[in-house]
Length: 160
Image: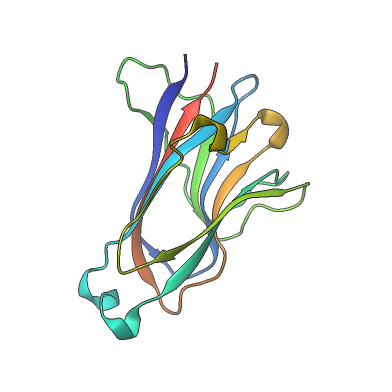
């Protein structure tokens, strides 16, 4: 049976293109992305028409070199009786993951005036990765015009 986890960052100043989330699956424990939520938590500074920004997001699989410059939060199980996650997570890597044979799996955009809430409701459409793929990232493709205070949650299934 699959086990669901969250990977969270909270109230982080985002001023550069970066891998908002990076997941490295464990051996024999493939993962799939269930959904993600991003929000601008900076208050009114980025809420007006003149500050509105549309940011590009990309889900990419297959980088061989992990990114750096962020933090490595512990994935938390949604079910308190689940075991600890086998996968490794990183958030807000300002040096993005690189090299390897990559595949873009999902491209989207986020208007920072409203929360970005996205769910892959059909299991067949969920981006998946194995240890052979090395990483799967949710990338902020280009830097915002100015620093934006952001929070985010990635929902991840670890498959048996």
